[in-house]
Length: 211
Image (tube, rainbow, N blue to C red; front, side):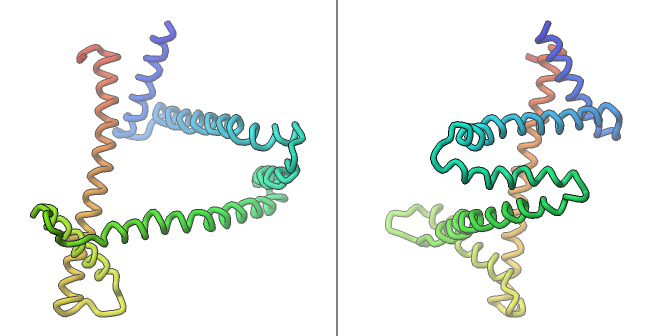
C-alpha cells in the first residue's frame, strides 16, 4: 500500500513538473513549491544535526575547554534572523560581511590553484618527446596553440590585426566556441539522461509498457 501511494505521488509530481512545457498551471506550482520547501526543510535538519548540534550546542553544554569561543559564531548566526524584522534588519549585515570576507579569503587561493594554476600547469607540456605517438604529438600541439590563441583573443592592449594578433584572435574565437559548445553539449546530455530516466519510470514502473 505504501509503495503504491509513493508511486502515484512520484507520478503526479513528475507529470506536474513536465506540464510546465505546455504552460504554467496550479499543478506545476504545487510541485515546484513542494520541491523547494522539502529541500529547504531537509537542508535545515541536516545543518542542525551535523553542524549546529555537534559543533556548537554540545561543546558549550558539555563545558569543553575553549568552547566559549563558539558563542561568537553562534551570535553571528542568530543575527541572520534579524533580516525578518525591518527595524533590526541592519544587524544581519555583520554576519553577511563576515561570511563574504571569510569566503573570499579562503576561496580565492583555492580557486586560483584549482582553476588557474592547475590549468597553466596542464598546458605546459612538451610538444614532442622520444617515443611519443603521432596522435599524442598532434593533440599536444593543438592544445598548446589553442590555449595561446584563446589568450591572444583576451589580450586587449594590442589591436587584433596582423598575422600574429589578428590570426591568433580569430583562431581563439573558434577555440572558445568549441569549448563552450562542448560544455553546453555535456550539460544537455546530462539533462537528457534525467529525462530518459523519468520516461523509463513512467512507462516502466507506472504503466508497465516497457521493462
